[in-house]
Length: 232
Image (cartoon, rainbow, N blue to C red; front, side, top):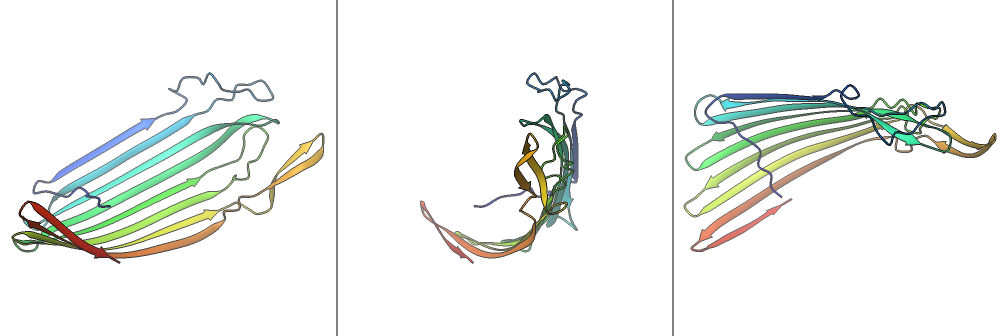
């Protein structure tokens, strides 16, 4: 599939936004919230802060333009969990940020060039376990995904045809790191162990790098459009 991202223009512009959800201060009570062993209501909370900035404009004259964008999200969510032993909260934290930079230029009257770079980072951490007497196997787990992607696209326009050549390089890094190994939760029945739930098994670090090159030729023949191409 093809994705078209925003480009800069001949007028310099800048946009910014910020939204917030403060959580329990404005949230209505949860009618279905359970109670813990002490009879207290266990209510959840959801907090989000999100913002971004974008800018674009001419770059060194009328033939080139730039566009850049950056966004961030910060979330904290308390999930209500129940078990035969207790009811409580499992607080967790999410953060993500993305950035995009793009340069477009007109090389000649019928040739153009686009260069684009994108980076994103997502982290899930801050799990402190189960507030209410239990500890989850995922307590202390940190999950991070980081993606880098760069591309170059060249377009050549003829009288009845368009040739587009592009190269793209991307890398994804995944890092799952648990706090410690070994048993984390012991399920008992009147003092007798029934089961031992171990720590998170997905403790790993890996990277994946992809390189793609494609060429597509589009030709208009009367009422017909013929398109052919390939990629590796």
